[in-house]
Amino acid sequence: MDTHSPARVPEALDRDLLERAGFRPVRVMEAEPVAEAVLALTLDSRQPFAPGAHLEVAVPAPSPTAAPSAAPEAGPDSGPDSASGYGAPATPETGAAEPLIRHYSLCSDPTGATPWQIAVLRHEDGDGGSEWIHSQVRAGDELFVRAPRASFRFRAALPALFIAGGVGITPLRSMLTFADGLGLDWRLLYIGRSGASMAFTRELEAEFGIERVEVWATAERGGRPDLAAVAGQWLREHPTAVVYTCGPTALMDAVAAGLEALPNRVEREVFDPAAAEAASGAGSAGAGAPTTVGPPFTVELADGGEVAVGRDESILEAFSRAGIRSLSSCRRGTCGTCETRILCGEADHRDAVLSPEEQAEQSSMMVCVSRAAGERITLDVKR
Ligand code: FES
Image 1 (cartoon, rainbow, N blue to C red):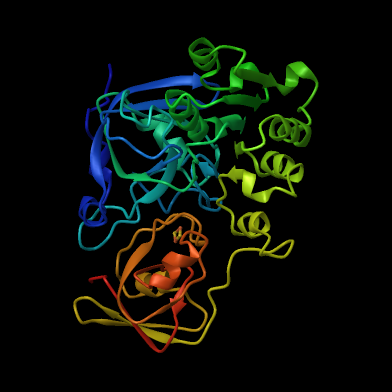
Image 2: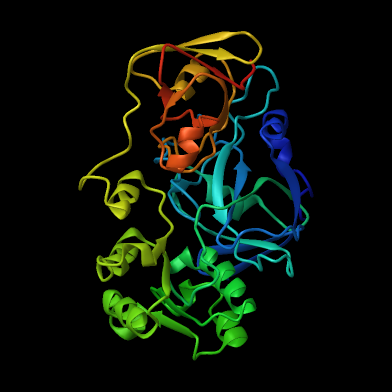
């Protein structure tokens, strides 16, 4: 007997918190395995989005009685999580769990010609997000999503080489679909361990042809191609082209290594702060997450309350200590989930999400890492 009850997904979540943060329910039209450990979800929305954009998806937090979890997922389509119980810790106000927020790239047509689609890789050794989606979500359910956010820049007027590794195909699929619609000259090199582990290979080859789509299974071809050489060759043949890459950090580093003299010709999906700094040339090798340590200060809340933030804690941690519910995901200043509006005062920005121009505007901040620039700051947060 099928005991799955449709539309039960949001019931385990703190809907009030999510709706105040701009999340909304969207129906799952189809849930279909598309490769080993990869589940594609087709969602009931055709809202256009920027090529390469991603959705934030709310999933129930694992039970506190579950095994200790790994670090939270760091960004779209990536990061560890694990099988465990779900639905806790409950908040005193609602009895609902404070959710995990996970990021998944949209891989459908950005113009809205097809319904939204995401593809979720199952991580069995992480903190539970993808495991919950694989084991619990079915057609007819609802997901709570906040949509869509653009973090992977697409330059629509230039020829493009796309280099994908594994589930890194997802943002690149929306980009190449858009590029093809514009009539741009583009190619895809899609690398994975084996054909069975790679999503959408047949669809891509059938839709765009093998002259544009090269599928490279390392187990069958004796390893990875020389990515620096591939990218360099493409740029020699297409002097104005851009190379877009998404996948494991080692793969993206290999692509960038061949283009060190042309850093503005490479776009990569970066969610790790150290990698972001390295990619921009601003950081030192081996740099880790940004420090949240600094002088103590006070956060004034929109409802007149106050929260003291100590020297060794983040605003997010201080909110949690004070019983203020808030959303977060990476807690490293790289995903944007905890972005909070500044009502008065200025932030000492330490994130890798806002551009220098956005940081200078002082209209919002990432409360997982950034601090007040002075002794007080007022944020659009209520108890
Ligand atoms: S939780 Fe990801 S930027 Fe703060």
